[in-house]
Image 1 (cartoon, rainbow, N blue to C red):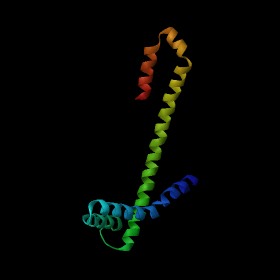
Image 2: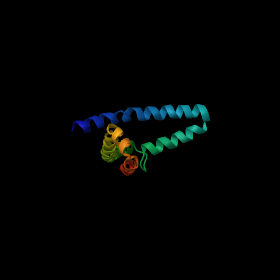
Image 3: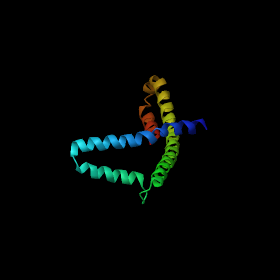
Amino acid sequence: MLQKLETFLQYLHNLWIGPLMLVEISCLTYWEVGPSALIGSAVLIAVACCNGNIYILNCFTSIIQCILFQAILSHALGGMRVKTARRTDVRIGIMNEIVNGIKVIKLNGWEFAFADKIAEARK
């Protein structure tokens, strides 16, 4: 539950910084491109605020949809991060064994056998 609250608080700032960034990017684009940037900004605002209609309620709905999409995507990426961490732990464990026993490996000529083991762990 605490993790969900922390994740929510991370994305809560998108509600206020999103419109601020939109204004800032529109101003910078106007400065660089000129009046034609206003058309692009209008299209950007229309796409961000409406979901087929030009109502304020749809803007709120779009924000909620974005937050839900971010939550689903964060959950999926979290699962991938756990799998990656497990694989990394296995690979680091093998490397620690090799580093700790490097003298034995060199004396017995087992370099190629361990190179194959490392290559297999990296796949």
